[in-house]
Amino acid sequence: MEYLVSHYNYWIYILLMMVGLYAMLAKNNLVKKVIGMSIFQTAIIVFYVSTGAKREATIPIIAHGHGHDAAHAVIDAAHYANPLPHVLMLTAIVVSVGTLGVALALCLGIYRRYNTLEEDEIQEQLQ
Amino acid sequence: MIIYEQAPALIVVIPLLSAFAINIFGLYNRNTCFPIALLAMAATLGAATSTLVRVLQTGPISYRLGGWPPPFGIEYVIDHLNGLVLVTIAAVSLLAVIFAKLSVEKELPEKIQQFYTLFVLLVTGLLGMTLTGDAFNLYVLLEISALTGYALIALGDNRALLASFNYVILGTIGASFYLLGVGHLYIMTGSLNMGDLFNILPALYATRAVFVAFLLVLCGVWLKMAFFPLHTWLPNAYTYAPSAAGCLVAPLVTKVSVYIMIRVMLSVFSANYVFDVLSLAGPIVWLSVAAILFGSIFALAQTDLKKMLTYLIVAEVGYMVGGVWLATGYGISGAILHIVNDALMTFCLFVFAGIVAYKIGGQKLSDLQGLYRKMPVTMAAFTVGALSMIGVPPTAGFFSKWYLILGAIEAGSYHFMAALLISSLVNAILFFRIIEIAYFEPKADHHHGTESSEAVISEAPFSMLLPLLVVAVGLIVIGLYSGTIVSNIIQYSLPAGL
Image: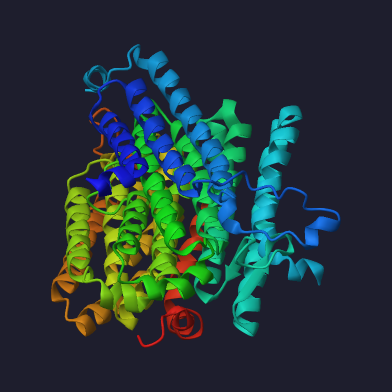
């Protein structure tokens, strides 16, 4: 139980991922699949961001980094959140927005051609 | 000399900048798109070749982007393995762009500018994935090539949209798995640089998180390369893509994913971890046996030329994955050699399918009747590609298959050897069936005399024939020199002790 609670952030991202995966694979409506895809990607972003967070830590900007005090101040990495995962996720967010855009554009094209976004109805028309 | 020094970066920069140029100049004049793309691809091939030559002369190159030292900055690493893959990608893209000119003008007259922009961006992504020595940078480039691939496929005919949509969904799952795996590695090691990971990871080999990271990355890459049973997106997506897009996507995307699998297995993790610590090799070789058999049998069931070729890709991916997981020197050499050979063979066959679509309009096998008389040169080149697929010496396909079979014997995986032989037999049936169809004339109509069935030679246009002939000659030349390639290039990419 303690294991569950102490790692609750990971459980949340696993839950989100499974919700997304379920929607992507099991839903019949194409837009719902796209939403599932978005949730899936967001889950991974949340996972990364949570790994960079620390208790009692602040944003990773060194205060009073310039001037006379800079040489005396001891900088302890434990006092700062890890900025790298957050920066990586900026890129991943851009990628996921791009994917979302392509997927929605495809949905639009499919709707114009088949007049529906339900996968089974499209399959019927393709037969 | 500066250009020589900077060649590793130019390999990515040239196609990337040409995408902007194509977009801007294409707005004013559509006819400028093709020359810019052609120039960019030729320059890229030059940069890739000079980089490979430099690697052969001086050993692996590490290129620091922006001058930042490796564990913090992004590093491009070029060694013998990816030097070879880079030249293959650049050469196939150059040939594909030459083929694309007329094909695009016919199939996508409204979207010439968009096509070439996506084309060069896809090449950028593929080359970048091959060059990079940074695990996260690889994810970004993976997605660049994937997104442009989705769009290129969606330019195709009616059913392409749905095929592309399925590819988006599965491709995104694959890339996300890869990203998640990299996340686990980062948590465990605090580094994203492949060389750095290689040094830090051995102390952590016993942990479950590293094992999970390896599995996630592996599954992600498998989805991208359409390894059985994760191949479901591939046949439809590649069948309904425009011919010119198919010629670029089909030979390269799966092969680059195989390269990434090899890179992750040998340069991020190590041969010791992958083959000795984990006991996955047995089941994965069985899985690739299933992939080979499944791909071959389904190819046999198709009546559509392109769809048949797509199932053959599924089988070929099985060859390469199985070859790597045999964990023997011969097996890995065969898999690496097969990356090059299969890229060329698949390109040859897809260009042939593209020419058939251009000249005849159909893709059914029955449309091929009488082609030997109508297009003797095209069919001769196709025959070389087909013989290489079957594995007839002295074509390139024979030699990689030979190495794979030697690897299978060395590893004692006789089921893998049997699968290779069965698949060769099935390929022989498939291609001799096509050759037989193409030898015979279409059924003469009773109303016409025998005179009118005297088919006139009507060859494909030169710009389509050129890439086909170059690649057909290339298949024979690479076949003849495969011993040299293995002993001078591939040998150095094998892990020590194999």
